[in-house]
Image (tube, rainbow, N blue to C red):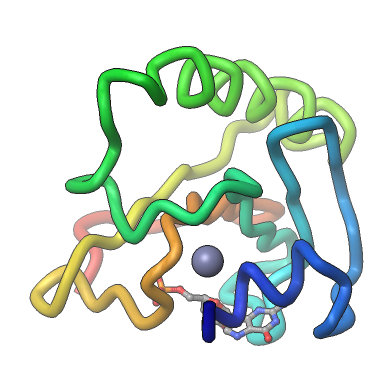
Length: 113
Ligand code: 5GP
Ligand code: ZN
């Protein structure tokens, strides 16, 4: 599969690891939008939120729980941070492997562009 994030999981493209378990991988975004900007992905290739299946319920639940761990590890848990999942063209998803941006380390603003 010609997918950048699958290649990152496989170690074929280098990345700076933040968290890993059997099913999940988190690494620093190459173009950080804030002092802390991490991408959290399932190792399994799922194209987007719209392709999550019933069988992925456990995986996605564990992914949410891992956000707490990563936020604690990066010291973002006290002041807060943002989790972003872009979907499709209007959502400006550029990599078609589901990923959650964890963005923090500064005061964020709302609404997004
Ligand atoms: P999207 O726009 O699809 O929600 O987010 C994709 C993110 O992946 C972008 O923030 C982009 O900077 C990041 N990204 C793209 N290619 C690479 C890469 O090869 N390594 C890392 N670490 N991040 C990447
Ligand atoms: Zn993939």
